[in-house]
Amino acid sequence: MKKSAFLLLIAVWFLILSSTKQEIVWLDKDLERTSKSEAVYYIVGSNLEGEVTYYFKSKTVYQKVFYVNKKQGGKFHEYYESGELKEVGKYEDGLREGNWKVYYRNGKIRQKGKYTKGDKVGVWKTFYKND
Image 1 (cartoon, rainbow, N blue to C red):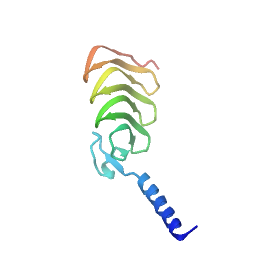
Image 2 (cartoon, rainbow, N blue to C red; image 1 turned 60 degrees about the vertical axis):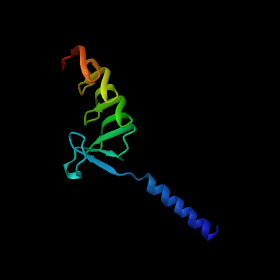
Image 3 (cartoon, one colour; image 1 turned 60 degrees about the horizontal axis):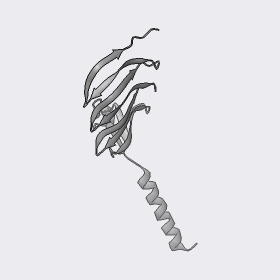
């Protein structure tokens, strides 16, 4: 292999490696940027488009959120720090919409109901734990 081709190959390899490394954005309890020492959550990268995964500082998944035009729009999943599903629903134009469910850690439904344009509507059912 010629020296120039080899150098080009190294340069391409370096660009690929550097472009795949993304910054960690540290977030406080309100999902606002903060320092690592004050953080509760984090995301990898700062692009709020498509599916974005938020993590607890302990590296377990906190939320999976879809964004459209920098607003929440689509499926939403939130988890307990131990990994169990906590809440599921969807957003439209940044507001909760449609049917939502909230779960106990054991996977049983704690609450379910409906949102319209971010407001709870209709009858919300609450289910009590029977251990």
